[in-house]
Amino acid sequence: MIVNTNTNTEYRICIVDGAYGIYVPQRFAELYGDSLKRAELYSVALKPSLLKELLAGPDSESYWEAWEEVLNTSTIICDGMIYSLEQDQDVFAIPLGEVAF
Image 1 (cartoon, rainbow, N blue to C red):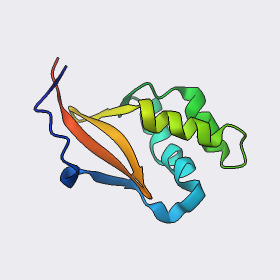
Image 2 (cartoon, one colour):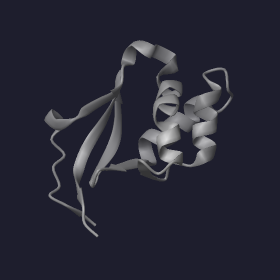
Image 3 (cartoon, helix red, strand yellow):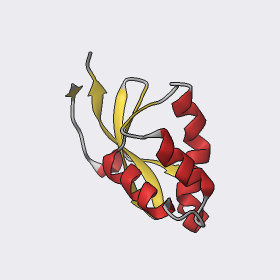
Image 4 (cartoon, rainbow, N blue to C red):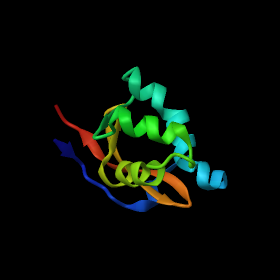
């Protein structure tokens, strides 16, 4: 359950610089894939197969489809907060609120 919902984009956090261009999805996987595997971050719907596709880079056949699925279906939980992902050149984590257990 999420409490204190606030979707104000004023609070979004840049997590991948758009300067990486077509490599933004790959950079996302490089930066956060290991943390997700070690459970330092928890993701809902971010499947290992999607991370594998992203790590393969833009020459991979399913790279862009995998990235689209990550953006559309994944949320990340870190330090008791839940975030959605959004790309507007840069990739942002948008806080949705606190996780209540």
